[in-house]
Length: 324
Image 1 (tube, one colour):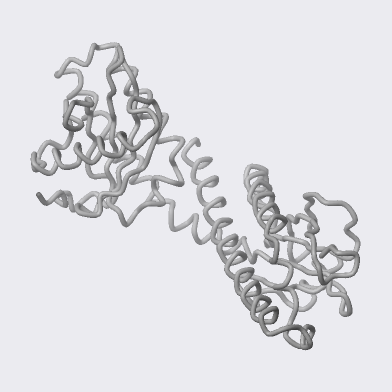
Image 2 (image 1 turned 90 degrees about the vertical axis):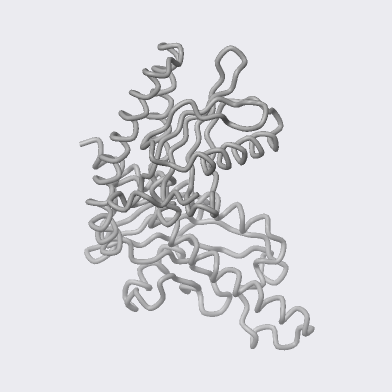
């Protein structure tokens, strides 16, 4: 039942065309064809079990399923024809999940286009085989192009995105860079430039600015606080770059910023993370412990946001490069 038989191709392994049956997804055609039939049946059973867990057994859509037994990840497109459910599955090695998630729109469009061709041909076995061969070869070439430019994309990203930073208006010290990831990247002068942005910000929203040495896209916002003067903390979330990226990326980062801000604004105790132990020395021990916990949580959130910004940059850049 070993599906790891294609050593030359690092990502794409097989494409499969299924029809949903009573006991599982029955394969109509797949390519390459040198696969263990029992393994194919096991995958079909898992597909059915996943669909059975949905609100509607028969539905149209895209979903990703891991197959750890075979060290695979499957991108599945389900579609309905005459009240019968069909699937198109792209199987990749499970150590390349970013290939699916960074290119999911493009991959899905290709699966949808193939489903329409199959429908027009009334799912004849010979035509299904031809389409599986074409689909497989297309994904192979696409994955090769992805691998060719992935490293250059990563290098460009690392050379461009400096940090994700969260700034805080300290009640005594004024604006400070509270958390950055990666740490210790910004110089003292660059940190002061960001702090100045928080000092002059007056209205919640997204803005960008460029300096000779850095550029940033930032979001000014406030969160409720029981410990702050005026019962609110004034904050600035910033993505810092060597130069401003293209508009598609800044738009995507805007959405990331909004979600991050919303997450902070609804967390009832996150404001406590901005207070050091000496600032709340007279507070009860449980409050001091909670402040430490919230501080650690903010640290994790900023790290996750930075990693998400890398994914945004790479996926958007790759999509634009593949259109060229």
